[in-house]
Length: 136
Image (cartoon, rainbow, N blue to C red; front, side, top):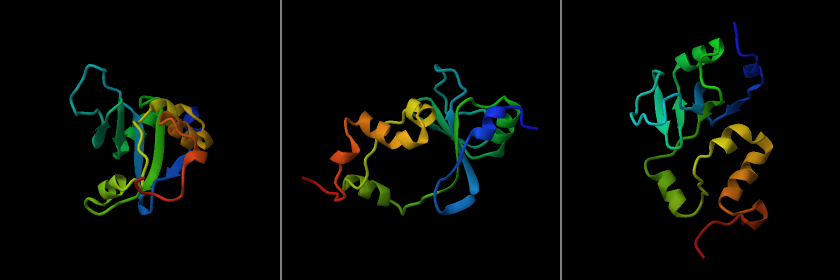
């Protein structure tokens, strides 16, 4: 039984076209702030700077269902993949804008406002962007 009623309102996003049967849970770390180890309480977790973790093991879902898991989560199915060095090359070509992960944007900003809020962290607004990428 689901003990956290608020979870029934959490959307599940499409993370990408690869392995769409596989779940990814982005969540706040449950470790104390002074714990600098890369160990998590979940079986398969990657630590992300800014107090975040990405967990792919079922135990986080079980913890969420009992009310013992992380309070704020973003859940997606599937992922996008690039060849070795491809993403880095695209970033170097200015094909992507990157911004520091901000839990307030990820968890507290309404979905339809996240893109503009992330742009604002870079001092940008969407009207300032061109559909063409490159160097000036």
